[in-house]
Image (tube, rainbow, N blue to C red; front, side, top):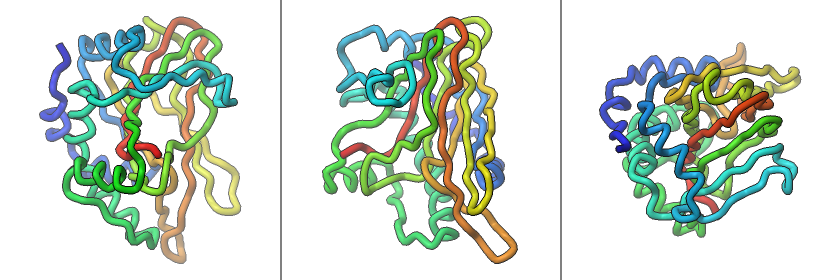
Amino acid sequence: MQHDPTARLNAIDWTAIAAALDAGGQALLPGLLDEPTCTELAGLYERAEGFRSEVIMARHGFGQGRYKYFAHPLPKVVATLREAAWPHLVPIAHGWHQRMGLDVRFPDTHSDFIARCHQAGQMRPTPLLLDYGPGDYNCLHQDLYGEHVFPLQIAVLLSAPGRDFTGGEFVLTEQRPRMQSRPEVVPLGQGDAVIFAVNQRPVRGSRGDYRVTIRHGVATVRSGRRRTLGIIFHDAA
């Protein structure tokens, strides 16, 4: 049975998470989901029901592998992750937007933000399951989907490195103005989550804050099968 991650989210030191996000655009949440929940969620990929679409990455130049977007109603643990993480992430998002000179602010509840998305025609749910086998990878990209974008998202590794798969590291790159891209490999175990910037984040420089662009992807899986849960907080047009 899928457990409720709310207590785990509420117990996290969000001041430390905000500092990590400010420092590098990503922050690790160890053990966000337990092993039985990871196994149950990963197994959903084999089912036909519960999803709105499947994407074969090679057909679109996204890499190799596949992923499925959940349909409404979302699985309970997926919906809970969106709702329970929201109040912790909104203050961080507001701080980033203020530093980047962006006027957009977010409501207190995730349901109100989804209503904002739907009013703008962004009606399709975006949480997804990603599936990679040997030789599969995900090109560096951003998950934007429309006018209304929440600047943070979460990925949870559902498979166990070394047991279920090898390779397949989660990778972030950061492009600063007039500088070469900086890569970052985020070490994840089964059930670990990473919070990261969707598009841009502020960095403090000698002349004030400036914006850097973040992209994320997955390195080539060498063996086995790797499945991941993606939690995106805005819906898609």
